Amino acid sequence: MVSKILSVMSGQISTRNYGDHHIPERLQDLPTKSNPEFFEMVEYYFHKALVAAEDKLISEMRDKIPLEGKKKKFKGITMLMQPCRTILELNFPLRRDSGDYEIIRGYRAQHSTHRLPAKGGMRFSQFVNRVEVMALAALMTFKCSSVDVPFGGAKAGIVIDPKCYSVHELERVTRRFALELAKKGYLSPALDVPAPDMGTGEREMTWLADTYEKTVGHGDINAHACCTGKPINQGGIHGRTAATGRGVFNGTTLFLENEKYMNEIGLSPGWAGKTFIVQGFGNVGYHGARYFCRAGAKLVGVLGRDVGIYSKDGIDPIKLDEYKFSNGTIKGFPGTEETGGDLMFRECDIFMPAATELVITKENAAKLQCKMIVEAANGPTTPAADAILIERKILTIPDLYINAGGVTVSFFEWLKNLNHVSYGRLTFKYEKDTNFCLLDSVQKSIEKRFCKEGVGSVPITPTNEFEARIAGASERDIVHSGLAYTMERAGKALIKTAEDLNLCLDLRTAAYVNSISKIFATYSEAGLVF
Ligand code: GLU
Image (cartoon, rainbow, N blue to C red; front, side, top):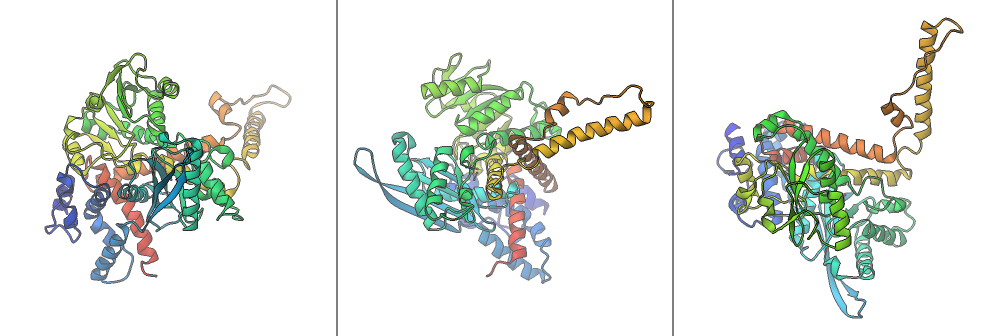
């Protein structure tokens, strides 16, 4: 067992004698590859974790069958967990505003349906391809499981650069895509629920929900739960837009406050004075940066699509967002120096990749000058880079945990839609009245015990903090505390598994082990064969 774990930690897993499970032959060069294929990369991390988790998973199986039978079942379940269950490729025409025609290609991959609905974003980007969508869907499976969101994993992508199309064209593309998905069971509150991702947002979710409701979902009272990330007046939930960034902040705080990890990487605990660089200034990068700064950290660099900006004195993310909105770029933001892509190699405490996948590679991992990486993006680190970072004692908080805040709040939105009532609506007044009753009751009890009849009174007044909470929690408060609880619980579970398996800084393997264990238990108890 020890040699098995050590070999996992170094990233060089051998097929020799270390238990039955091993990395498949075709994936064995992944730890040394410069440009791994994205889906294979996720498969590799999955198998790496299985090597570490195998003994535990088999020993925890509750079937009353001989060990050989359990091993066969283990193999069956883990084989089932690996590939994408189904992948839909669509090609449909778009008549452009000019009258010209184009064929638009889109995908939806459902990686796992061990729980339903399958869940995951819908991306608009000219770089979308089948493998990318499959890999992102697989990451969604493990991400949902890591934070106990009871969904399978899915992802959609349309091969389109949204900046090159008018709003009307984008609406036609989205509605047509929605209709095709819905007809084929890839858009439905019960089966498959998309959300925003790169290049999409509330507007696209409104089009999806509206198209579904007016067509295949007509008459379904839960039709609006067919996607999440909607605006509030379309059934959305307060706090969803900033949720991924907020979750990144919650999870990072947990590790920054952990003295053991901070000692290990030579960083003082807490937020004060921490410097950070963000790659990507979209929804996740912006909100993440905002929360980091609010906690006392300093944003020293932002790497945008076309340019990087740096300032050792700090960049205000809110002002930068306003600047980007008016100018269409972060280039030229006052008080900053312009840089190239090498900005990510400048010295800082925390590096936050918040753009796209496969950006930290075998070639550049040795150049990073940070102590911690928080993977706000999906799949930013290749296995070769991962091994280098562990070797260099850089703590990487993996995507499937740290950026799970978005899907967590999506889960809350979906529940809200099924309940047809916003959080707190039924309890606001009752809570407020109860709180005043409580104060009154305390006052009366004290007066009864200590004051003679008719003499004086002991007014009980709420503290400022209690005063602020007395009227009960708003929907936003409930979402924020639900998200904080989720990130803390999953983060603690991650630390425990890393300790139990002696994985040290290899939190990625620990995160995959935790996710796999839960999915494994679901299949194991329910049975595989129908
Ligand atoms: N696109 C987000 C992600 O990658 C959110 C997915 C969702 O809310 O379903 O996690």
